[in-house]
Amino acid sequence: MALFGSAFVVGKLVLNTTLPPILFGAIRMLIVFICLLPFWRFELPNKKYFILLVIFSLSMGVLVTLFMYLAIEKTSIVSPIIIGAQLTVPVGIILSSIFLNEKISYKKWFFVLTSFCGIILIGFDPEILNNILTLILTALMAFFYAVANVVSRQIRDISVITQTAFMSLIGFIILFFISYYFEGNTINYIKNLDFNTWLLILHAAIAVSLIAHMSLFYLYRFYTVGTVFPFYSLFPIFGLIQTFLIFGEIPSALVTLGGIIVIGSVFILQKIR
Image (spheres, rainbow, N blue to C red):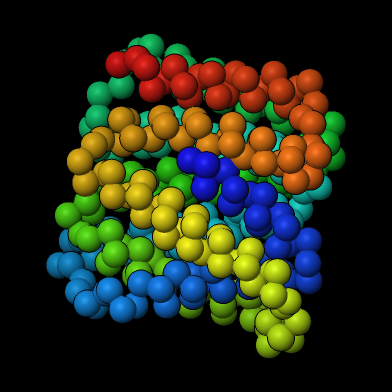
């Protein structure tokens, strides 16, 4: 969760350079694929699981990455995005209830509702109201991350290396062509990257995508979404501390209150049945 929290801070540092967001995502996915290539035997599952693997790859490798970096690029402050990403937990619980038939108690439904209320409260912050697109992109990122987590539970019999390698390959191909078409000047952007920016990209690819994500998806081989996912409430605490240390961000009163409601709701979701 500490590494997850760093993803947004590192993303903002990279996007403060000349590198555009979609190309950043494509390069990150390429590095992940290259790192896993020696360990991947190119084994693919049967048709049933292959379709789920494709859905997982499109959700995690393409859409989460796309909306995350677009949201970070569009905002001047990172903390609301970090808190907004907590939507992943209630959405994940809702999806697991619908598609995995996991039983959700009335108490859990109550705190799912309060977490959404906290996000709505954050949306009234003047900084967010002036750029509502950021909140929409963050919500889309959270939704597709929840989809990826639910699907990951269904393909838990596929090795984590196969899941991540296939996801990163699909993510790189699609994001690269989207970047080439919409952002252009791909080669020039890559040539202009300095050493420090490459280190930040490597952190996003190795520390976040390989270590953090693969560790999370590995847990789904043994535990339900409802058991694993609530620990996600820890990552914004690490993320907010890092945004303060690196950017000096101090969340506004509305963001703080909304954040307490969201993080508190997600934390309680972990404690109740």
